[in-house]
Length: 514
Ligand code: KIV
Ligand code: ZN
Image (tube, rainbow, N blue to C red; front, side):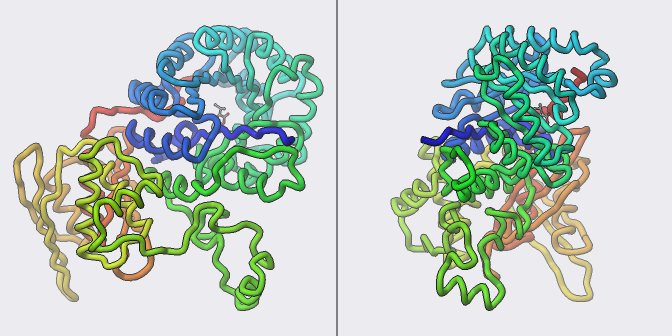
């Protein structure tokens, strides 16, 4: 019987710390549900003390997730622990994750505390967190650059105080696999009460070693990996969930443990996180990149046709890739539509939501002959993006674009129930359209990102556009999908402005100095 390797997903906490990857409460609920279908063991939903918006998001995720444990991050401060405890009240299984820095550099320069004071804060935080739940995780921040003797002291003390998961973060991505694995082994061997806790790792990817370091730790006794979908996370990101899970699964000859992940849900999660955050997945990304299972060379193609295993170590379908299948078309009825949505794990909270997406499907089917699974996923994304706060609505858009002429766009919006129309010129059709919208809405936000991705193949594919706007330190991502990318761009811009207007004022998490 193999050990269980616990998968702790921090896409909605560390992943959200990627500049621009902010998520609203409703987006976090959608990601949380997708992670639960993926059978992630622990979902770190946010940092409740960071802002009222973060608190509400963690609370909302805690209230809807039933199978996975929901976790909230807290500095080793009473007020943070209490906020996390409050936010997690409704959770079926709640975990509080508290942390404090332990490297000489962080203790002296950032915290300005002595090592003894740091231990005192850590123990106090763990004891306070236990008033809310028995499931307490402790992280010595910057463990990758901390002294092993000090780690042993503080970890022994927090286990005595009641911590049951000890997470060893390589906060700045400084470690090297062999050395990081040896550290985990030494800690487990040297800490007298280490058998009372599960050792976990949390690796950053600054040297491109986050997955390798995590796997080395597992080979040396760690039984929890903290990771994110698509490797999202602070700076160069965290260990990518799909890579660690598939490495452990594919190399069962090497690992003494396995995860409980339903790997067929990996691709859906990857696409969802990519579309919500506006972070595209590079084509050559392992497991979830568009080329991850594509064979270009004739020799490889020939080999795979003769025997798949000649050049493939995993099956594409095991991580959720299906051939672009035409699932529905213009004549498909509501029942066929609903049952395909259910098969794809796309759930609706109400009949109205289902009807709304069905109506969008019919409109799309009028423009596009073949409707693929990816199209259905985009329809749901777009509907839920729009549903959040539709103060401004795109009514119509007309663009004149001709060789040798300056493009002009004419747009009509409904703003707070009043129709307004405006025109603008631009460098191209998209530029003119977004300028015309901005003239009407006067958001005064700065455009941080504009990106277009085709959802399926073919010139009739829907384009999915992400627009990232920044105003007063607040960053939002707007999404729009359409077979016409100019219209998709306008939808995405309107969506982003609506989000800026919403009351969900959230700061970048993890501000503060303990
Ligand atoms: O990278 C890090 O050290 C963290 C901790 C809060 C675990 O994200
Ligand atoms: Zn981190």
